[in-house]
Image 1 (cartoon, rainbow, N blue to C red):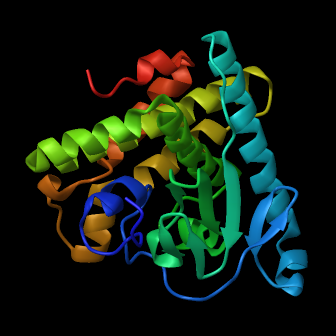
Image 2: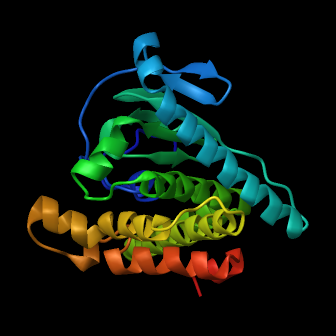
Length: 257
């Protein structure tokens, strides 16, 4: 851990290129500066233009983390919120240099979610997953990885991968599907509190399916190799998101049984 993200096929890539593998998006640059809602590597002009999106991202982040604070409290534990870094093109992270090509990701070493705002346009245009709920799914998935870090699940998986490299991809898939299920748990809470509208769940399912390994491989390589999956198929990702949504219980998200 701690090396550059999205470079090569090592454990850092398997664990931290969370929704997409390397090479999905393209380049740019940006330096983060502190704000009340996280860190944003945008110019003042860009910041003004992006303010509605920044407000939306901040709302979903706060809402998702509020959900997990309550879930942890109910379980007799405490939840330490993650921070958010918005950037364009590239930014320094606790896990090395983060770049747009990696897609959104979570770094456990600094406990921050990193997101290039251009990604949401890519989610619609290139992956066919439009809508606010599709974007919310991405954020909730990354917070799901923070939940895993809080529970020590990510470290246990890394240890298991070191001990059994041949099962590294399978364990990466299980970790990703659990984060999808955790995103569904948040969606359940949001729905119970009247935050979702008609069609939102379908948008979330559409986003989960759109970023399945099989869909991405077919689109980028023209063929599907299930043995190289690191995030799960379209069916698996949507299935686990829906499982979390239907149950609303983090215990239902144990993909390692």
